[in-house]
Amino acid sequence: MKPSLKHIAEHLGLSKTTVSWVLSGQAEQKNISQATTEKVLEYAASLHYQPNMIARSLNTGETKTIGLILPSISDTFYSEVAREIESRARNQGYSLMISSSESDIDREDEIIRLFKAKRVDGIILAPTKRSKVEVLRLIDEGYPLTTIDRYFPELNASYIIINNRDSCCMLTKHLINKGCKKIALLTTNSYLTTMSQRREGVEDALRESGLQLDPRLYGEVDFAGYEKNIHRVLNSIFTEVPDVDGFFFTTHILALEAFQYFYEKGIKPEFEMACIHEEPIFKVLAPQINVARMPVGEIGRTAVNSLIEQMENAKGKAKSRKKQQQEPKRITLSCSLEFRS
Image (tube, rainbow, N blue to C red; front, side, top):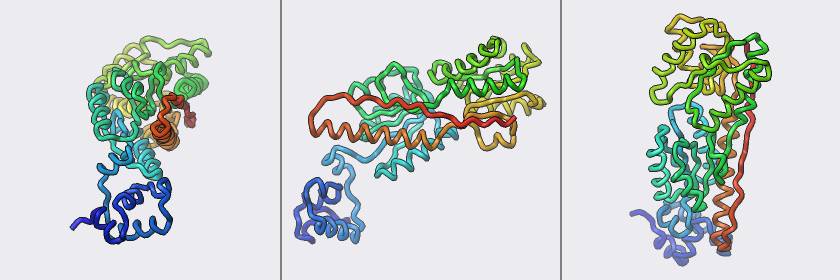
């Protein structure tokens, strides 16, 4: 028979309320003695007692869970970030619920609503930015929210991003210093602020060197079916500018697909290349590629810390009944640049 609060309380000669407070971590707050707390915890452990999390959440107002929404779990960058977030959350006493939006705004909105129905204490989101309806609702409700990698600069929400513009500018300057004058830029999801920043960084470096981005060397790859779309874009670049001497990829996924294209077309990539983030396989496929390595661990830890701070603040406001708005945390982290060519 599954042990219950009532069984533990009767065995120890305590009230169910006292036992509930101890097992929900409120012993100190409720001024329960250390001796009583240890007695309850030891006996509950001997019974392998598992608390009813739903009942506990109704009692405490929190579920000790965090919701994480990513564009794609299969993307190695996001899977690495998810691992860091889960590790940090676990160390802070939280469990993690993860879901993938597949860059579909309707699915993203559905997941946000589902997480709220599941009563997660806060949400970490890498948004699609196609729509802000549910995100705006979260902000209006004061729901703890932190966005990562992507963000809404016009909204009053916390975010963690990288120094996209500066990193791209420095990488492009390196390509130019290596003699590149015809640098192709491959990007995707240009509606995202982060992608706009990456393009601006490339253009900054070109402009400072007296160059400009040739429209024939700019390729925007549609994310949906990007494996085929990148072939079309690269075919156009090599047809229009056969003596292209450099490539800049705004994501590691685009670089991987380009490497496959080069292999299939028998193109030996002797030109200079640069990319934001990388895969371990890069050192085999293109050991000369220059990269801006994203601080995955720092992104994950900072996101959880930001969210927990909001959740603690929300609990404090609920107790004091104050409506003071918490100032959002806007954090920009630096990439580590590696010049290999």
